[in-house]
Image (cartoon, rainbow, N blue to C red; front, side):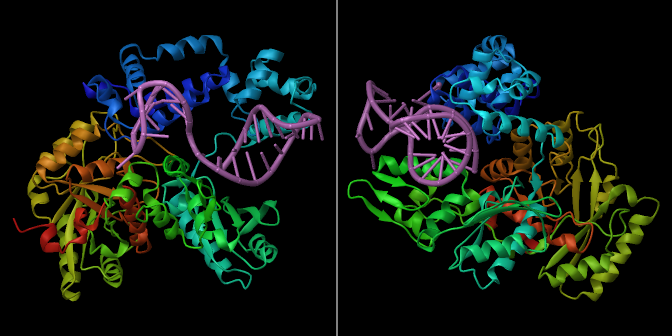
Length: 568
DNA sequence: GCCGTTTTCGGCCCGACTGTTTTCAGTCG
């Protein structure tokens, strides 16, 4: 039974832990890196890694070989990697936390544990206070100070959350715009994970060139949104905004701007793979340029695309830079043509004031959609607000507003709830009367969620599964959906799967949406808007679709309505 | 531990900064 297998996240966590403990033991660094890479690959794999290992197919994934595959099988059969269980008995759990403190690493953590006999966080605090850390070679007063500061900060701000792209994207754009308008600015760009449109971020990176770096830094730390200047130097600064977002600005030399933008956009894994590939071909790649080792010649450029071109790759869109096959594809001309925001022709999941939580009327939502340039819009209010005659009243209003809008298609839909037993909470004849039906999980996420959404797909009235895993970023993990079975059922029944564009949903997530696309499932990007402004959410959904390697032809609502829903 | 358009053995990204040091190891991104 697939549902009894450990989740990829949990398997990856054991390898991450094993890597940490091996590192504390001082074992071969490349072995440690190999475990971490494998863990990363597992997290980004949509199918069950445990299932793959049982079938002997996990080693087909890059970074996973025979040994790691065997260890995954150990997890399935005994719950724990043997090598990990042994080490957990020897190494006190808090020592792993030592090396997570900023400034401390595995070497220092092990030294403190083995030479001072410190085994707990509290013991570490005391050792620092009593000035015992400085008795160790290579450690001094400054280290003690750093340890105490780090421990205090940890108490103040425990377990930091990553902020949502939906909050960071407008914020970083505002900063980039403000800096571009400054006389000391030349080139300015977002960089880092926000440029790759990752769903969450730790800080927002901006890079720039300037004839007068000091003046640009001064303008940056003086921006109205800045509440605190965390660091400030001649070429870089870090600030915290009033709403708690961290921004990093780096001012870089113009002649290497392209190389630097490439470097600071990441991801780390993408850059490492790029550089390893370079080494194999006699090229040393850094943020300043590409050195041809044989001649010593250095290629640096203001143009990021020129970096990829020089290295023999097609330009890799930032959203794909995760070392998930994009380099090979860029070398062989196999990169996909990614969907763009302007490809969307309509929205197929959103709410009006007929839903208690909707803030725009049917007419307001329709007018706003028309103004966005859409050709169609489907109002999908929650089923439970459409009882006792309200379904008919809502249908009349949609029909009346639709008349006034001329050629624009205003459609009548519903978001029907999938109950705990897998049935839908609206009668089939009512669903059949709608132009479009979205079915979603909203509760009882632990009660056979895979079976429930698959049952919904079997209903011929259901066109789309909304936010398939029902996750909420920073709030709850998604339901434990067996995504491969769900995708197979979607393909079989022709039911579309949603990329929900709400900032804290983005569900399907990137890896799952990529799998769905590869399997030939139909994908819909929808706003799930509850207000006029939220129709713009789809920008996040399109970004997620790009991270999933999807082209416009794989997304249903890039097509005209007659092709989305051929007449029954 | 993984991997291969030199390789099934011998490699495995690059540079900056920090704190502790008289030349560098450890950490970080």
